[in-house]
Image 1 (tube, rainbow, N blue to C red):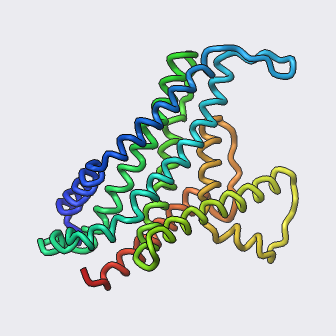
Image 2 (cartoon, rainbow, N blue to C red):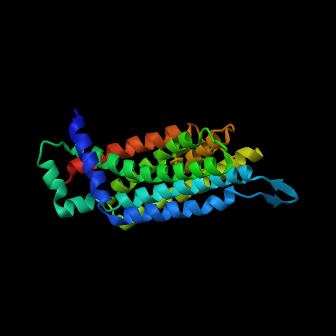
Length: 268
């Protein structure tokens, strides 16, 4: 049975340890600055193909584009924070110090995962809130499901964190990070093709390798598509046998279990 007190202590320590790194503040500050530069898109009308678009409409579509870019940036932050986490704790002896106390390995690992996830998604949420506030202040337009959609993307952030942490126990840190990014790139390709095929009514063979890959591959991009449909308040057609939120959540659970098992077998 996991002691929640030990879990929360490890989580808090992980967040505090990462916050000692000034690069996180620099990265967040630079990202907010870039988001603030978008304010000009929310203040003026534009003529496109002879049709006048008001500031609210331009701001609405700008917000959606910014939303997706920020969500991808949050995944990359999770990758960067996770890639050296376990190795650094082991090399510095911090893992041995923590586990020498009445802290179980599952409590330690769960706290590490939660800490990185909280920190990475906080970065994402801060930027999403910044975009929403800019939209609200400059146009008065509200997007009711903007923040709930942001919460949906937090599952992609969690997936990236646990995937990198698991791979880093087997492979060099940089390779683990690149492979995780590669999973996301392949997801963008397969999910985009599948979505395009459905929209165009193209039937694919049930036995084709592309279809099999589309079924078993993590639905990172599809989950992003789903979050976007929440913002736009349009219907979403699931790509694959299960909803992308269920797919990504299942992957997070399976990868976390493998990570706990792998870490339980290692010497610290």
